[in-house]
Amino acid sequence: MLCLGLLALVSFLSENPRETKSDRSRNGAILLQESKTITLESKTPHGLMPGDLVFIDGAEPESFNGNFTVETIILPKNDSEVSILLSDGKTITGEMKQPKDLRVLKKDWRSASGSLSVRTEEESQEVDVRIAELEQLWGATSLTIATESLEDEEWKGDFTLQTYQRRGVAEKSELAGSGKWIESSLPNEGEPSYDLFTPPVLYVVDGRLETSLPEEAKPEKPPEEFGLRLDVFEKVPYRFRIGSWVNQTPHLVDTQFPLGPSGSGRYVSNRIEVGVPYKANPDYPRRSKSSLTQTNAEDPDKIIMVDAFVVQHVQNPKTGITRPIGRALIKDYRLFLIDEESGNKVSMKPFEINSFMDQTHAGQYRIVVESTSKDHSDEKFTFEQNGKGTSFPLALRDYKILEIDLVNFRVHIEKQALDPPELQRQWLGLLDDK
Image (cartoon, rainbow, N blue to C red; front, side):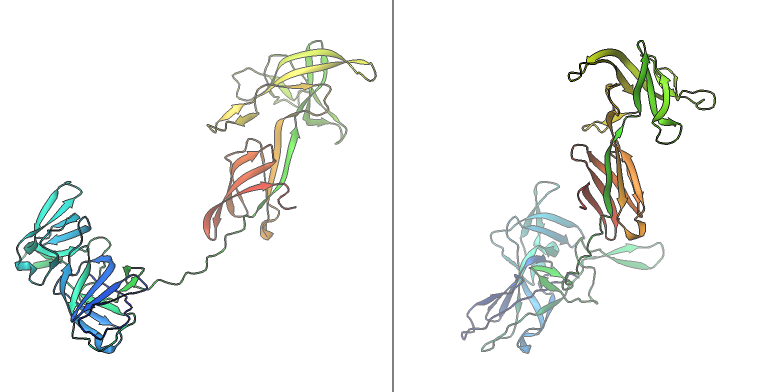
């Protein structure tokens, strides 16, 4: 059983009972009356057939309410989308090709001659359908019903339409025993599932048929706070410095291993051969005073190599004093960049350090983000300039580093919010909270 509901607002009847009157409801449905025939039109196609029963409720005056029989169905226009159910259970869907001599279907269509044509998408050709074989046609938007004369009466207001109609052809299937099982055909996708014994009330909402009135929009829950702020974005001094040299062999100071009390400024010194890779010395400090030891280029644990070293004498233009300066070209295997196009790690090119510098910067940064949640205010996460793509949990939420802007000292972070569930993205800068 298919159900059609229309919501119409009708102004009034003229004094001439045979004059045609029409009114368009606020939802776009149209009702036309001429003498004892009423034509109903909607934006939504229906599947009613002549002979089906409709029940009108809620109209004014009360005498307009009651049961009515569908007299005719006005066939859809050419090229309209239709779906036809045949008496043998077959369904044909496509574009309607209306015969020139046929505009409506009447109650006697089962004994009528002639045919309809439907251009199907699958076969890309017109299929002729005998009218007498029609069981149901979906796609029409207009129908007529017969009513008693409404002469000298005004009728108006929104009304509800309940419909009673067939749900399709029953197919019989023989079982192994002597009994028979009657199996009804399922409704097409998008059609209501109720049948003859559960007639619903249908509504026209914006010209479409609905089984219920739309609910009022509920206020949306505001999104979660992002819950993160940028606490530190600073350059990190390079670990090694030139402390001294002997001939063309530099001695690199390792600031990761101080000597003596904190703040003394004394650190472990390593004699580095030019062109030889070095890695962390596992014997330091038990059996060796050097924090680095020689290795080879195939060693995955290699840390650093001095590609070249020279000593130059530079004169101070103010004092006239000439002093030697050691210059080393360093290859650090731990430092890399992220390729913007591929997202892959790319090794950094060799860079220079010299003995004139108290501190050397090799493009390394220390970045710290911390939670702004009152319950997790002490939680922080630290990463470096190559941390793009890194995911980390903080304050019971999952975050991901999308971009690191070394020029403007900011980071682009993505958060998986839970209440409501959604993805949030935000740029964090040092001055955002100031």
